[in-house]
Structures are given as C-alpha cells and as structure tokens.
Image (cartoon, rainbow, N blue to C red; front, side, top):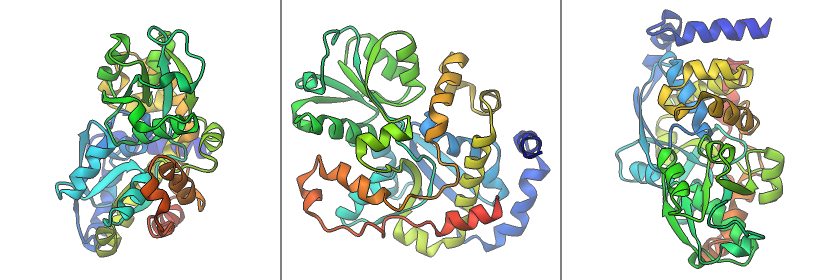
Length: 346
C-alpha cells in the first residue's frame, strides 16, 4: 500500500502548479521569518545533490511556503563563498566545510543531511596512467577536482595522505562536475580525477578510468574514512539558523520529504523528475549512476553522532593547523529540525 501512496504523491507533486503541492504553504507561510531563500550549490546536476533537485522539482519547498532560488556554482567551495559574501543564505554542500569554517572563526551549522556517504570516486586515467599500481604513483600528477578546496579536493588529499603524498606534491585542476570533467579526462588534461556521478559512471562505462577509491558505497566509505562520513547537507551561518528557526524547519521538511521519496522511487521515477540536462545525453548511464548512488543518500536527514569526528580526522590528515585545533564537534550540526520533519513525514 505504501508504494501506491508514494506513486500517487509523486504524480500529484510533479504536476505544474499542483494544488496539492501549494495548499500547505498557505498555513505555513505566516510563520516563516524569511520566505525567500537563496541556496548556493556546487554542481547541482550531481546525484550527490539529488534530494535538493527532487525537493525543487516536486515543489516541496513551495509546499512549505518557501520561495527558493537555487544558484549553481562549479564546486562546493565557491558555493560556500557565496554565503560568506552574502549573496546566498544557505549552502547545499559537503558537511566537512562546517568544521573548516568553525576553525576560521565563521561558524556554520548543518541542519539536514542529504547524503550519508560522500559518493566521491578517485580514479586514474586508463591512458596516461596505464601502469598505475598504487596511490604513490600519483605524485607529480594532475588531478581533476570539481573546484579547488571543494569536497572532491579534500577527499583526494585524504586518500593521498595515506600514501605519504602531500597536497603540494600534486597539481589540482578545477574541471567542474559535468561534461567539462569528462572532456578533461578524455583529452589527457588530467591524469586522475576526483568526482561524482554521473561523471564517474560515464567515464567508467567507456573504459576511460580505473577506480582507486570509491565512497559511493557507505561501507566502503567507512573503511576509507574510519567512520561514518556525512556528505551533502544544508548548512548556513549559525546566526541564520538561530534567527530563522521556522525557515530552517521548512527547508528541512522539504529535504526530508525528498529523501523519503527517493528511497521509495525507482530509476524511471527519478528520470521523469530531474531536468533533461542532468542526464548528460545518456539515460542509461544516469540510471546506472542512480542505482549506485541510492544507498549513499540519507533516508531521513539525520546526522550520525560520530560524523563530526570522522570529518575532523579527514581534515586533520591534510591540515596540521586544523589537527591542532580544539573544535566543538557538536556545534557544527543539529538534528532537531530533521527529527521534527520525520514526525511530519513518517
């Protein structure tokens, strides 16, 4: 019975200007401290951010009384810069940035989880690194990341650190999260890539890459990072969350609802909802990528209690100053909004 309900819910919510989608906003809009919210994201087409896209496309934000504008950037670091600079209110980005910003004295708070594993894959070129044997072979090589300083950059640093390679021992190249990343690998501009789906699946299916480390599988992610590693989430300056609790709750409700929809959805459901451009010209590739990523997406928006400690270890492994810092590993996130959202959308 639940599957049938979800299917009807999908059909109702996906209809343009659906009354079912917008009616709840009448009741909730009055309580919102901030109705218009700008969310900055780095690589919106990625499956890493699928809950954000589902919430937008199925009008879940509207259902909460929100008017959300999503601004897309080449990588998570640039999306964060937009919030720091004041041109956006909230980041849809990697969890570890909240600790990095606490270290810099600009406290951020994550308030709803989209991904329970990073989904980031580090792979080497089948052409320029055909003789690859271990991570040590990457020394002196060019590694493509979505954007310098982004989570793809941090994950690559972490894996290389285990092989004794420092960030300065390689050259990082920003290649984005779409066709530009695929082209950079195929043209030989980079020797390795740290990226996400659907980019990785496109390259893998064509035989362009050999995978070194894969965090699309939560179990493999825990092995890589030594614990649960929260990934995509919504986070904002602590001041924003504290001044706008009802707005933060509304945003959380929409994402948790999207999380739950994804867990019940099949590939054909997702294909019908995401914009055509996200498929990068190949529906079969996107379906494969979705099936690989689904397990890494959060079912409920709740952050694992050990997540901050895992993220701290990852950052500390590549930054001695952060390693020496005494950060509050509970101040950078909250589950209070997600718990309420789960009561609303059981």
